[in-house]
Amino acid sequence: MNERILVSPADLMGDGVFETLHLRESGPWLLDQHLDRLARSAALLGLPPPPPVTPPAGQTGVMRIIYTRNLFHVGVSPIPDQVLRERRDGIRVLSAGLGVSAGRQPPWSLATAKSLSYASNFAARRWAARQGADDVIWTSIEGYALEAPTASIVWLAGEELGTVPWERAGILPGITAAHLLSLAPSVGLRPAPRMITLPELAEADAIWLASSVRGLAEVVTLDGTVRPRSPWTPRLLTLLGF
Amino acid sequence: MNERILVSPADLMGDGVFETLHLRESGPWLLDQHLDRLARSAALLGLPPPPPVTPPAGQTGVMRIIYTRNLFHVGVSPIPDQVLRERRDGIRVLSAGLGVSAGRQPPWSLATAKSLSYASNFAARRWAARQGADDVIWTSIEGYALEAPTASIVWLAGEELGTVPWERAGILPGITAAHLLSLAPSVGLRPAPRMITLPELAEADAIWLASSVRGLAEVVTLDGTVRPRSPWTPRLLTLLGF
Figure (cartoon, each protein chain N blue to C red):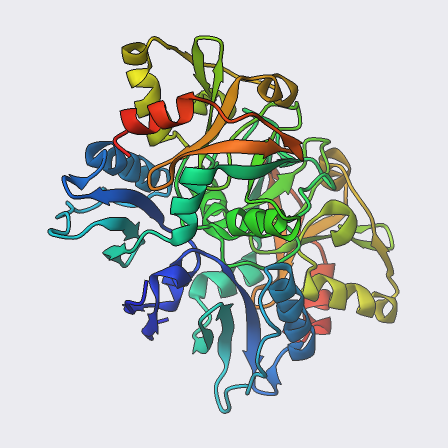
């Protein structure tokens, strides 16, 4: 992200929406789903429907769409080495209470929108890094696992491939996770969106954080406890085209 | 805010801090307190200490300091008419649960930092506007009044001038409210920072939202109930130099 954009000070208040896509040789992966979510996020922030996007040609990497009250920006940057490393080697994850109650959000809640107000997401990951971890799983006051700062939670329990239902939990609808669950039957797994407590999650056969560019990052330690690598990680990554 | 600033896309993610000051003929009001809070907010976001500020000379209005990982910006804009009107005529306020537990914030919480991630603050005020109100008082899951999207709560109960203790409540430390409470004894009132439930607050003799540029905006309706105007509003505004 070495590009520079001319903005007004009001554009710096996090009062807009964005999407991050994996820009493949075949084009932006799951583009329609990301544009749908962008439009949904925009509506939640009281923004007009976003203008159409012309995918950048002849490039691969990270494609980011940024949309505020005064600005519509599409940029491409290389995939950070860390992202590739985490996809390959997995991640060390800490759980932490977010201090919110699942499903008790205020009427104007933006918890299901991908807003630009990302300071807390970055702060959560800095907190994890200070403790030698890579990422965080947020939990609700009731003890449910919710989501990660920049990813959805996916788990395997027997033949069930689970993820947290976004509407019930009041979290961002995860595009990669939803796509993966839709493909689950093709590899003999049963899609199972449901609420899950942290102790239940810790019992799962495998846990991943799912997002567009990282794809699936397997949780190799959870709160310091080492988890065996799952044979499903390479299979599911292949299924997603990574 | 017609100025334009050259930024990188990363600066648009709300990952910075800001301050808004009342720029008076005598200079920026309570400048040292705002710079202290800016530095405190910056530390909470893992930013280096902010550079020194040279106050703009020969201008009055709204002074805004914006500080991100790549940018330090000081701008001046006129005071919006609406702000002057709300200071004079008071405001219609709705209460609404924020879905958070007072004092149960996560370890990386930015609730006490003035971060640029303001989308929810704007969304809360748009929600109020859709219902014909001007502003919102946020309450915790336990029923405590916390703060407003861009202001602190101050109330008068007998001879007590109250405000919500920021550290205990996990809210932004209000500079205008703290300054007003420090001046309370000079007008025969007793400063009383304490937690207050919404029903208790509704019983107060007067309620104000306190912020740097609006000063004090008296709550003239709370959840639709009309409140008598307080003779203290002009006295306290004068005390604050408005």
